[in-house]
Length: 308
Image 1 (spheres, rainbow, N blue to C red):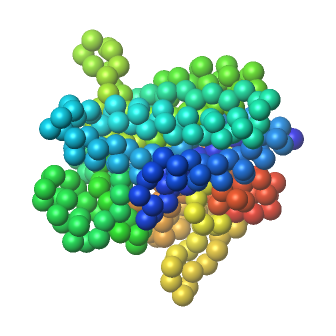
Image 2: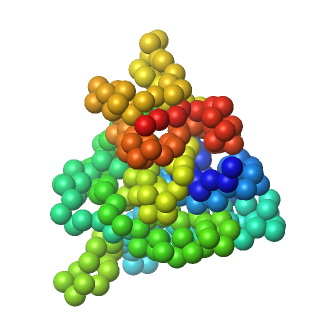
């Protein structure tokens, strides 16, 4: 059966920890990622791809800072737009090469946030490269960055991550889906914007969690499925410990309890589970799985499924 699927692809599927970020390396990662995505499209599903941009926007910011003696520094929202453009280009090209008869477009997407969101007082979103504890202390001292440990993988810069209120281009996305166009949108959670005193849109310094924006987009486009792709095949309790337990099908109430018990960290699985819990609570299908498992997970044969 044909389904409308919002597919959330992590920024680390484009740039893995430890990789230095050459364009060719990222392009090779995207080409591998596009294998599973293209199979979903070949199966006849309507697909909207939301991608992360944490590593990429962090690198762009670093380039800005290193070159500021020669080139003016660009604000964080502009850096987010830049990352949307080049990641979208890589995905669009890779999918077009695999599906030459399909129409595939990238939409530069803005996301409305509340300027009074408490997230601006407590930066939690990791972006950019991974650092050791010593390197993180140095970056904090030199640049005034807030640094934090990211799921046992090292330290990264933390920036505000407000909740998305509205995907500005949602009507255009729905029109494209109705014409069987594959849409790449809301990259990095969307470029964060607010209304100013003149009721005009303007950017604000933040990086929106892409899983939260994927949830909002899935609601707005009336998707059947929200699928969040990760580096692991399932969600686990007590991840990385001898008591690690794989989750396969989890009722919403039980998933909420696990979340309240602190099984899912804010910088890693937490936002993914929260988005899927809320989507499944609406009677929809919510799945967390690895990229390779996506086609099988959509058939109910793999991954972790949150059920209402």
